Image (cartoon, rainbow, N blue to C red; front, side, top):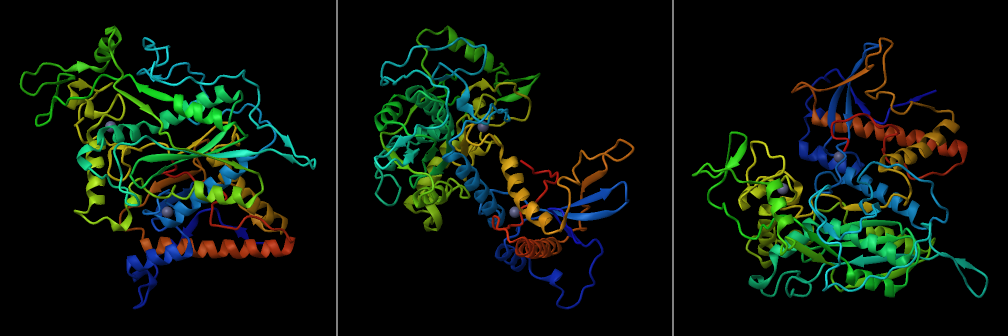
Length: 529
Ligand SMILES: [Zn+2]
Ligand SMILES: [Zn+2]
């Protein structure tokens, strides 16, 4: 009986002797290419694992887990495949899921918010319970307690339960040259609005879902992927369970808006000078007068009857709606399309054609400059630029240096969620989906008599008889891990795993999902998120 190694590859602890052609001396770029060819992580992390019970120490190699192709094609591909499974599992389900308790933030649209505003947090004066006068009416239907779509019976007696695929875009910020994604007149393109819309896009999508649920009369479930358009604005593809009249979808799209009730940040007050942190507050660098606090700025906003939201956003008029039937080629193809760009950065549509000085590069840089200086959240250091102390501000904040991804040239405003999934899509977190996939493989192995390591056998919460954690994970001292050794260990482990799995499938005559070197267990790692 063979013991299947844990999901992680184990590198040899002793140093291999250095012969002339020792693979450990290969060029790093070559080894990275090999890792990519073999489908293993190109940026593996080596960790020291000590088993306090057996006294064994080993070096464990963990995949980096990046979702970006540019960082690690292998990990990004696995992440995308996992998302495809998640999407497929929930789309056409016909049964109701029991109430599930997922981690907070999983489905932002699930709350029954009545307001179309971000009012800066709980306990604030409710800004406007009335809808904007310039927004179209929203359809409303009595709510049924269901999440699955209706059935339709065809003349031949066949029953259909159709679902939908919807694409939503943002409005125009100025005319674009067809096929190039760059403005006809960059001087008249609304970069600021484009940047703010990108930064808050996910909130607008949440709002749209809430409005759609009310209009459709049932708790519509969705799997949505936010992707970049050529013009570098985000758009969203939504797989939706059940069918809704196109008229309702159009009306909801037209009537949906999102208002950001933040203090005004139209005019920067500190451009060449920066506020300084003295005596627990940010102050004017010359007069040392304290800047307005976030709370005071919000209170002022509440007391001003003529106050306007800092930003209002709406969806573009272009709405693409397609009906999809379960089990068709169309459904499969659509899932591939839906997840196609998840491994790409927001700036990728500019692609390799982007040469410095080209209109495409100028367009990208102009938008990047805009997202860099706008505030991303109430706690963002960029508020200092507008003369306001960020919420809960401590020392060390500098405008233009907020660490949130939203501000960088790769994310172009879209620092947060790229995939939005409703609670009752599958009722599972991504971790559970990952474990499910591994469980299928494990079952095949077990049926073939291959002994399988317990999942999580090296987890940090496994205790030794003395009540203390049995396994101790730590960083490797510098110089103790070799990149090449880590990659080779992964490749060997993958081959061994695949051989065992193929053999097991032959023995049991079963088929399962194609094996990847997805871990059967989920070792604790520093970058688990
Ligand atoms: Zn990786
Ligand atoms: Zn920020």
